[in-house]
Length: 341
Ligand SMILES: *Cc1c(COP(=O)(O)O)cnc(C)c1O
Image (cartoon, rainbow, N blue to C red):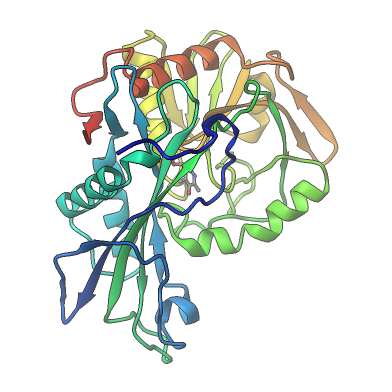
């Protein structure tokens, strides 16, 4: 076994086919034992529930090579639990947590040659997902499902350092109260595509969504949670039932409190308060933290004191500590690092 001949530091965030993917099918009320396969194609009936009524949910996590040469994943138990919650909300069968962890362990071990080497900045992105497979034309949940997980090497999210981004407050809504914003459902992304294409057309990197009911509180972007830092160094993150519970955000709050001794607050954040923060960032598995330099609300600009050149000092510390834990040079809290090999 040898690492694949890939220019690790120059791959982007795209799909590169690897050798194996994991598949398990649900039929007659139970999951089969599951297997690795080299077949990257899926053949489904034209009337499969996923095509008609978007009955699908997904997860996203990464495998890394640590400094001492192990291949690890970060808190996969939380991805497993979140996928179970997503499945329940979408009337899909739950893929058990132990099975989820076993599946991604086998997947990554089988594709070990695709895990980028330590120090390259690249990682192996893992995409577990599940969808209704049998024909359904009357609106109801499918009775047969497939759980699948593939992986693809992805390049460093920030080439040449993390430059702060500019985002806009959008007039579109992402998630209704009591809707599906808190689960990782494909449908939440389908309806965000128009908003993000439009944001890019207008010259913005991302959309800030406000709460759909009152449009006065900060929710999140299309695919990342917000963290803010107050002028006196408290880390603040919005609380809402329609925000996707980011594992990165939950980990950052823990790191802020237990590693950096910072105060943290998880609470509703009125948009009117945003102009008073010292730093702002977006957090998610893909980038860990992207610094936000500017937020534009219908022509009114909020420019954070951290500026447009680099991360603010607190967000930089959070970023360095969390990535240090993931890469193995800072000791991780119990259970955070799942060693594959
Ligand atoms: C996946 C996702 C996030 C980030 O979650 P992580 O677990 O940190 O990767 C944030 N917001 C939305 C809408 C998401 O789908």
